[in-house]
Length: 301
Ligand SMILES: C[S@@+](CC[C@H](N)C(=O)[O-])C[C@H]1O[C@@H](n2cnc3c(N)ncnc32)[C@H](O)[C@@H]1O
Image (tube, rainbow, N blue to C red):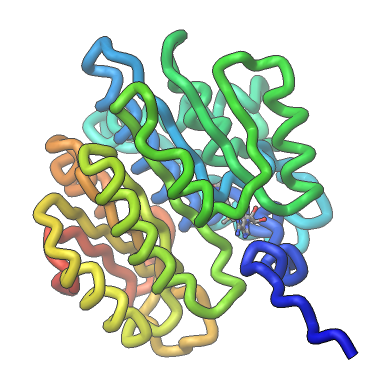
């Protein structure tokens, strides 16, 4: 009998792919992630030299909030739904504006019926010489993404394993760039892969800005991740997290986190203004809080 052929990790991932972002688009975690993405991209635009955005786990790019999937969870209602429900103070509104403008451009009327994913948000913000590379491994999601950008010469859509893409696409020829790494966390070891991914990026493209996303159910489960990030010895790190409740029931998505490598120098100040406002907008739960720190592990209130 022939020995079984070893399967590549990408092949195994393809087999495992159950995660569909359509169930979660526009939830509180998307709001924080997409807000940070817009702030980073807007900062890149302050210099005239072109840059590239690389989205390693891009999803479909656009989500119908009236779809069966979105209606089943209703997650967007307690995310972008709340953010759009009432105005914020002028100070906060100014920081949220590029993000909310991207959302609004998919919703010409009053009602919120569509939500742009990270590649579409990035694309909306690019200037004519900037480039987007959006990668998605799920066959159907990749097909939707490819069709969304079919006639767009500034966007390249790829169908690769995101972790492979992270290595093969760097450094970008513009030597300026933003990399979003937003895996679905349906496989064990995604936190370890985030750390290895960051190490890879840092080695190939030390000046790039990297945004790593992670979900928070049990905060203790992040201890090893924080220690591994700290062990990389990178001095330009910003960690932000938002908890919508005290993380007592660790089967729930209690919080969302981002590690940002080479953050724009303005980012911490903007998040310090906006985080209290969006946290209280998401929930009045007394256990809710946010975190903003240049260290790993970040200090919690
Ligand atoms: C959290 S979703 C992405 C959401 C998107 N970044 C956004 O913010 O709108 C993660 C995506 O990664 C895709 N995916 C899963 N494993 C992957 C892999 N190994 N390489 C690339 N994409 C993958 C999933 O199909 C899913 O669409």
